[in-house]
Image 1: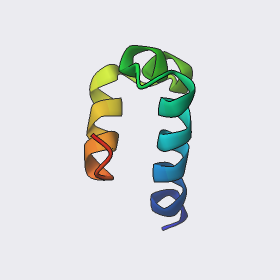
Image 2: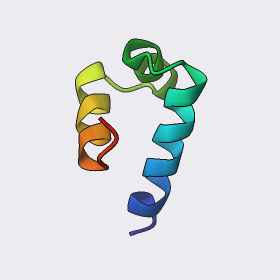
Image 3: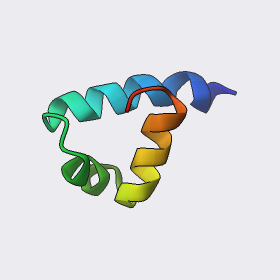
Image 4: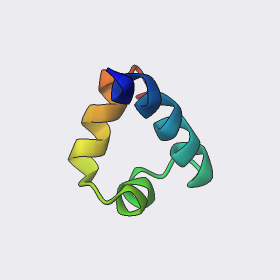
Length: 46
């Protein structure tokens, strides 16, 4: 699926932009912090 290919790069870029601050990243992405953590973990970025 395309999202599985794009999502890790997007997450890396957003996390770098907010200096690894998960709260800021979740606000920027419009998802809960728990959802963000799940996505980061899914892609081995946690």
